[in-house]
Image (cartoon, rainbow, N blue to C red):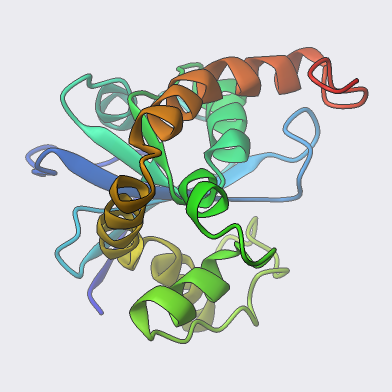
Amino acid sequence: MPIDLHDGDLPNGLSWGDAVAIDTETMGLNPHRDRLCLVQLSAGDGTCHIVQFRGDDYRAPNLRRLLTDPGVTKIFHFARFDLAVIKAYLGVMVGPVYCTKVAARLVRTFTDRHGLKDLCRDLLGVELSKQQQMSDWGAAELTPEQLKYAASDVLHLHALRARLQTLLEREGRVELAEGCFRFLPTRAQLDLGGWIDPDILEH
């Protein structure tokens, strides 16, 4: 798979079409503490672009412009976290959003397995390796294994969206899914504001 690594921002002149798959790698799962290290992107053409942040410069004007472009849908798996960490470090709220995890929960009610690895295996017949998931993403030099892992998290999201969208249509839950997707930026803002535990949506 072609992987293009960029330092601090996307280069000029890239074309993404009407949808881009996005994922992030961070130093941990607390956006207030654990810095954003990578943003991975794919236009669905088999190529992954990875923007690496060193921790001292998150201006990234080209990336910010793409993240807020209303004409490009951003496809995530578990968008809730990615939206929060991007807002915390890049200062923008991503939109519009499609979340494959939310879509999977709405149509795969026969299982509790909604992870990216499970979806790729069950819906696409693709086996993903998660060996590098807990590695040090803040390292100055990333290993080939880390880059391959980071890329794999976005290279299949376009295909997953297509498969899940068919299932949403079959089950009559497209409108419900779209309502959830529109709410995700607010959910991310609530998380950043401290309403994770207790969750104000719980009883």
